[in-house]
Length: 319
Ligand SMILES: NC(=O)c1ccc[n+]([C@@H]2O[C@H](COP(=O)([O-])OP(=O)(O)OC[C@H]3O[C@@H](n4cnc5c(N)ncnc54)[C@H](O)[C@@H]3O)[C@@H](O)[C@H]2O)c1
Image 1 (spheres, rainbow, N blue to C red):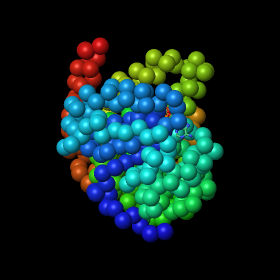
Image 2: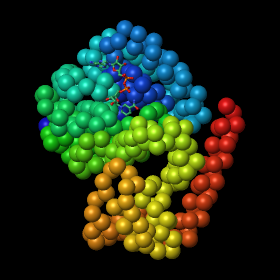
Image 3: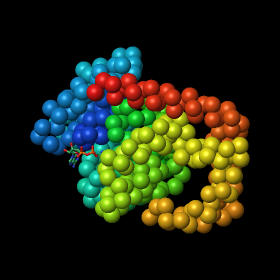
Image 4: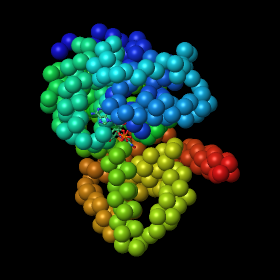
């Protein structure tokens, strides 16, 4: 299959198939970034719900700053899927998380979308390899996994399936960047991608703790919002623990707490802390921090925690 003839930066018209929480969020995002959007959703009340969702999102999007030419008037709700994608230069599918439904739907979208146009799925956890097998031209299908609400949370995880061609993954990643998202391009398929696997580990442990009477819902939420959650906006879990190692960084942290990986602190089993894994973590932190010295990172983290705490006080004060 030939590569897309349109450059990611030249896209002006996108189609959103499925317009619930996520599809509607995508619509709001694309409208705010100045795109013309055509949406389709088979539910009888879909158009009404979609307009309500966009209305609700618009004040936040306006506060963040709309792109030149951005307008809610640029939204069209199509009568059929085929009409929705007929002139699309990019398609985002956000139908329910049902494998059989997605396989059929993506095949229909693929059959109706102009050649070379990239088609992306919002799936939370199916691999594109599982979903693309009924498509006539599976080479252009990718996963573009967003976070709720897609009009505010920047991350999109992009990954292709076995039949996806590299150009489509590159094109989609570049397009999402141009469209104002933060992109992680994965070079292999993993169920749940990266962020959902991490979220899910915490979520499952939380459910275990509630089921066993070990903690209440309120305690679990407070343990994150008053604890580690305050540090994560700036540094993720790896650089956060890099600083937990003091001047010795991640190397000291792993040497010090390595034996705790065998302790029953979570129901998720830890991998063997081999010297190879240790080195990968230590080198990864060096790379992720750009080799900056620990005291500099500590000062930045402290500033970020203060900024987040102040922002939270402001939001809570308005309740
Ligand atoms: N909700 C989240 O936090 C979240 C986050 C990331 C990804 N996702 C993924 O996004 C997708 C949509 O999830 P959601 O939360 O928006 O669900 P939702 O139930 O809010 O919306 C799904 C929409 O799809 C429509 N629909 C039903 N059958 C359809 C079909 N055959 N073709 C097109 N549309 C159809 C429904 O009418 C509904 O409006 C799922 O794949 C989900 O896993 C969800």
